[in-house]
Amino acid sequence: MLLVGPNCPRMLICSFCCSSGVQGDSLTILQAPEYVSFQKGDWPISGEKIPDMVALTMGFSVQEDLSWPGLRAGPLFQRPRANVLVVVRGVDSLALPQSVASYPLENPVPFTLDSVAETVHTLFAEDTPVVLQLAPSEERLYMLGKANAVFEDLPVTLQQIRARLSQDGSVLASLPLNSLSRNAEADLLFLSEVQVLHDITALLQRHRHLAKDHSPDLYSLELSGLEELGRRYGQDSSQYQDATAILANVLQKFGEDLFGLYGDSAVVEVVTVKNFEVPLTRKSRSILESKQISNPGSPYNLAYKYNFEYAVIFNIVLWLMIILALAVIVISYNLWNMDPGYDSIIYRMTNQKIRLD
Image (cartoon, rainbow, N blue to C red):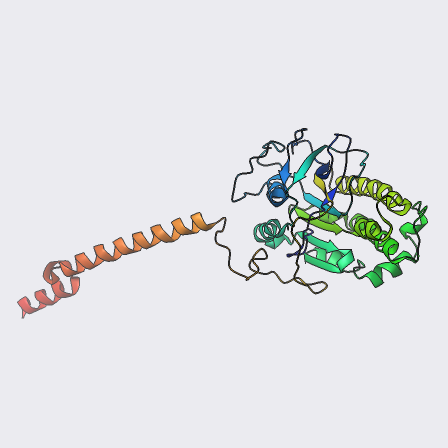
């Protein structure tokens, strides 16, 4: 499974325009199996509710009900094998060729999929699912489970990715760069993110067995190359427009490839956002780190206030204590009122011996 960094907005967030007519910050369902039912409509969803939506598509419980009509309840025993969330920052619109549905994104605050990753890790710890969190622009990578073996060769630092761009199989040989330059920093950042998407697909095709196990995988990617191009050249520039068209086509193919690798049993979402409403601060994480923190969502590293198994554990402990307490009371009462001459075989035999003597 793939997972996003604990203190980073793990899902792709970006502002774009689809064929459904949604303008501005949006959530687009790029791919989804038939049994995960997304209803077409202009129902807005808050950015902070994206993790709950992802959890529900994977069949997990959430602490608060999601009162959002865009997602309908699906079969209890039929759930997707993977969920892929891509966050694209700094773009006003993405003309994705095909999508299942698109919804306006309101209150675009930074969010993470840490709660979903924690659930996957807890429920499927023995199956070592793939969890991948990646933000190439910040050289931030978080992997868990089988992802450590599958993506150990994935270039993650900007230096590694740029070196990868000059090797065989680079996307530079197949992309229509047009006004983009191979030497400019902002252009290379964008092309590096495209290269990472290509390499993730290539590595998964090499390890197809991961898509056939019983544990769900989680992927979270954050792309900010368009944001840098907008700052450098402006959103009306030819570089920005060319990059926007390239990214839309790349994301469409990326979603189709992953959807096919998982046997048409994966959900691929794209979140586009122009700007986050709250400044985002992140805790740095070392490359290839696999340590799990107790509560990634808490800045003070506090324990979770509530666990999904709390009610079960509480009832087991409560009734076990009540049964043991009643057993001790009954045994103590009977011992206290026991007649040694009649209720104890030791005293009974001693009394008979005394009488014979």
